[in-house]
Length: 112
Length: 117
Image 1 (cartoon, rainbow over the protein chains, first blue to last red):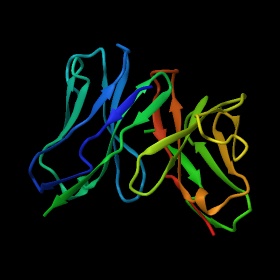
Image 2 (image 1 turned 90 degrees about the horizontal axis):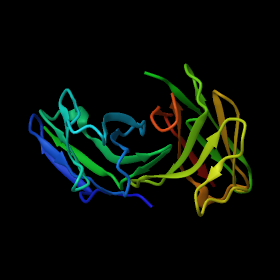
Image 3 (image 1 turned 45 degrees about the horizontal axis):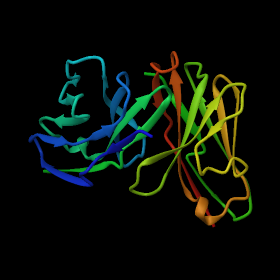
Image 4 (image 1 turned 45 degrees about the vertical axis):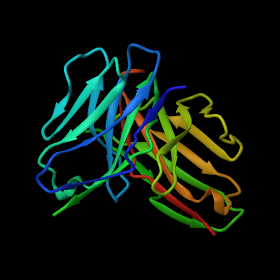
């Protein structure tokens, strides 16, 4: 079974600074999708960024970017210029076929 | 983006009663919907995959007689927690797939908080 590991239960970042959230996964497949989701206190899951495994270029979405290392099965999320609204639980997720497998999550706290 | 709506957003019920949670895709047709369960400060655990017009596929360890899933139309899936007990109290989240299998994007509902007294 595929597994997704987020080794950082909690992270803190100063407003306007940069933070990186780690994620590793395990799979024997070569074609799959990876995602980062944000879950604020409202509990609504919000897609932050997605990466297709066959694409070598790292995905970016404004202040959010990923460092996708396929051989190492690593998929970290970098948040630049952190804002108070970035405070949330962040989940890394792996998708093969229809099934989405989530990591345990990382709570991100943003200090003003 | 596409919208998925869950109802109710929160519900309190007595032990032994049944509770139905609805998941609707408001502006697209979803042949596949997913139901997740989330305990406080924990991850989302997939409970079942709901396919329109066919029986749901349950994950290992999920009681299909306890958590009844119906996907009668392309825009509606329901999760019924039967004979609810306090240990069923949790946050239940649905997601719906827009587009083709394997590549379609998933959209999440707002979640439903169930408290069983």
